[in-house]
Image (cartoon, rainbow over all chains, first blue to last red; front, top):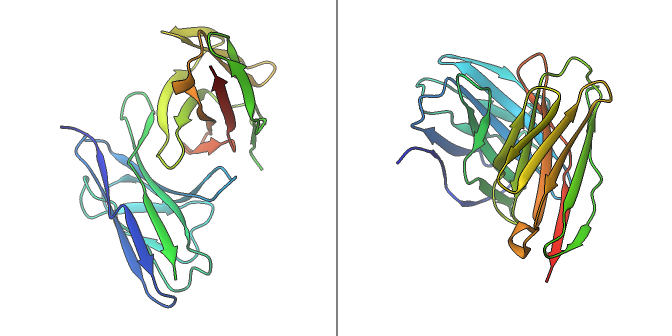
Length: 112
Length: 110
């Protein structure tokens, strides 16, 4: 069953803690993306990777880090430097031929 | 600053009517345009892609693109209550990133 999976679905974090959000895809897509969505706002790009072992900052990369060691996996770490991390985090991957992005189910992060 | 603009709504239409959702974009060089549907609490789902001027139809959905006017729209025919959602317009820029609008909330009432 092909698709994009994200875990966990819900995550609670205490202030000062780093947390890592998982994103896995078995669609053989080269490019993967992380977005953040806040209520009433559009999706904002955090980081993206077009190929293994390479990634670029998006519009709001401060306080986040990523790695891309495998084609299938693109984990996002929300560090304690991110001052307002409570949000809905969405991972996407892009088809190689048609540039269409498909989203995983998302992780809802809440800072306590 | 590249921008994608949408009316936030809500757009309310009766069941069976045509819903018309509109989007304008600022980057004249954009070549790829997408419509996503997002139900409350869920992730966006791609419903239409359009790359050239004119209309593209898929079932009850029609996407319309006018690059000269920098305008893209989505028509939903025979609207159903299950179409009630937020519709996001996205435009691919020349760095291969998608720029999203803030979405239009559609309400279809019985």
